[in-house]
Amino acid sequence: MSERFYTSELLSPGEFVLTGAEAHHLAAVSRHRPGDRVVLFNGDNHEYPAEVIAIGKRTVTLQILARQWVDRELSYPVVVGSALPKGDRADFLIEKLTELGVTQFVPLITARAIVQPKPTVVEKFTRTVIEASKQCGRNRLMAIVPPRTWDTFILASDLPPHKYVLHPQGSTDSVQTYAKGVAVAIGPEGGLTDEEVKKALATGWQVATLGPRILRVETAALAVAAVLSQPMRVQRENQ
Image 1 (cartoon, rainbow, N blue to C red):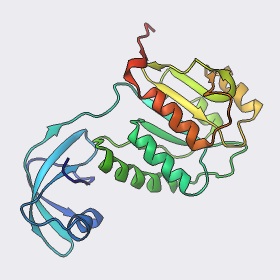
Image 2: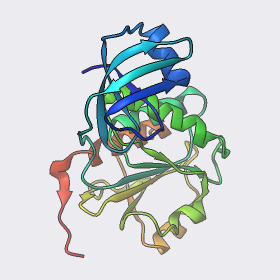
Image 3: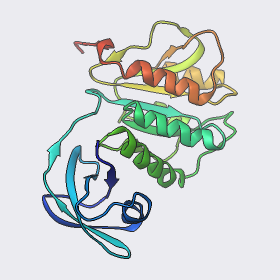
């Protein structure tokens, strides 16, 4: 696979000037030269194979050769809402959820969370998503939603119809993938309060578990995302 570079600009066959950090990375870090082939993408689910034409001090001019539909996405939405782990573990979480094909990530504000996410995490995590997408080949970016409180998240109208809260006392076999999509909620390492769980149940969420062991936030999120990213598990619902 040719090296991939991201831009937020519209792309189409023809000449294109890449600027900013991606231009610097292409020229100074990867040391591409005129005649080299690379791939551009902008999150529209297409790839744009291109040839380097010229390299300037802060820009790279490319000839985009084609617009190719390359779909590496799941066929159903997977939304993960989670409390944040501390430090670099949060970036690791976002990177791996991107690789696993999760559609949307929602940072959660819960009663026992040690890390209370701020609105600035949207920009920070989006940069992580872009870097992970460059590596894994996704052409559509995992969306990062501004932080939501627990009450706001469990009542959100934009979630898929099948919704699970991970909890040690949940059913061991209840997590399933559905064609209309799945939402999963993961509490902090201190756990969700009984009141938070009751509120979720009262609004139509199911309680599920990944086994008898207590998992770190990022371990739980990645484990359930790995399960939900397997197409052979999709349940065809009538509703």
